[in-house]
Image (cartoon, rainbow over all chains, first blue to last red):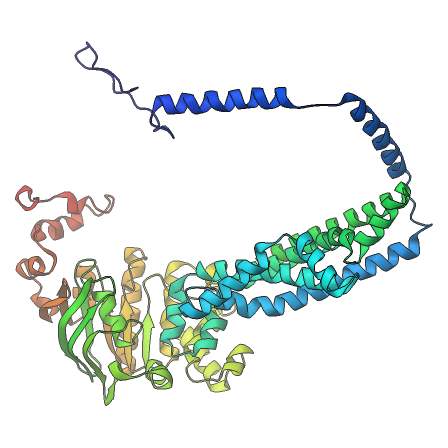
Length: 273
Length: 275
């Protein structure tokens, strides 16, 4: 349709256009118009209750006022307890998850595992990644009761899903020539794993683990809200009691630790390069 | 010492890479394997150390039938066959020394290799080899910090660390500049002569092959179409191996177009040859 028509000039300049995503101009404009019409209708359909918005703004102001004067002292014992729980949960779950994620990750790499093992390990990974942490935490809290154990299990499961999938994907992308070279020397299977595979993924692996520690700490504060213990539970209690100043203190501590973790994992990754 | 008999390889995709290849390699003999891309050169040398499984025929190294080995026996046989690769295939993140010592993996147990506790004799041998290939200043550098020529020297040292009796050399100079290519080929031929090693060298560069390798096998579409001395490579033989091309012209104009970009020389095609 938008091809250039034969020009009356004897030597027409050749026209070039980047190929369009939709070749059909009707379809292209139709989709654009439909999207615009939907946007207009959707905005028109919004039912905004300005009275409630203004009420909410007043409450938000109170909340922020509380945040401006964080109170670390009056609930310090609870906060300390929650922090220790969260950090314990984070470290234990990362280590435990890591130990299980390694063999699963090896088994889920198509270039080193036989098909049956690959199938099993990929299924485990899919299962471990199927649900969001909060849903898993609710399940484990229902199974094992309130407290850090449920949180530990939740984070372990998510660590397995995260690390084994990424390890497996990394292994599938290694340079096969290095594997070939080590096999050609007469090295055994585990020597090939050590020299040709581990050496290629180790840097990414350490970086991912450091990153997962950081994620797990953040998650530990979220799953606490559904009863899996840790600093999240403390935060939830503070909010339930309208103690916004204590809640602010907890949030500030979480922000501080997350930033610290992030800085540390960045540093570790750089040092490994 | 190496006897290849009626070797054939058909890939699972249905492509036939080798059909009925037979030849014998004498002790201490260096053999150049030439042929167009896809002729089966890589497949052939990988069948010898069984990185590729042959689908027919047999391969014997002295009194061992390589083509029927498996498991520990196969690994034991691989120790005596060193391999040198086109893109070096070094373990990039390990040091030069670790790369050379990895040639000893077939001789040491897993835990010894895991903790890098190689026997003193192995370390001594590795130092001697690094000295021989001129890399004593780079022992603890990481392999990815070296230049192409240096990396290929590490690759050569790794292959020799195995204490092999046969070398399989896959396009050793394909990633190197012309000067480095000659130096590497010279090093390989010298080392083979010093140690009385036999070797099969896959090589693209016909002139380089003629310069360094006494015996040439030409492979085309998985079949041997030439087996003879390097001096016998004339225009007729090259046409048999690679197909029609004005061989005289391109080799004559090599000197004159030295400064021209690569590929220009081969543009001087005989129009009749382009179909």
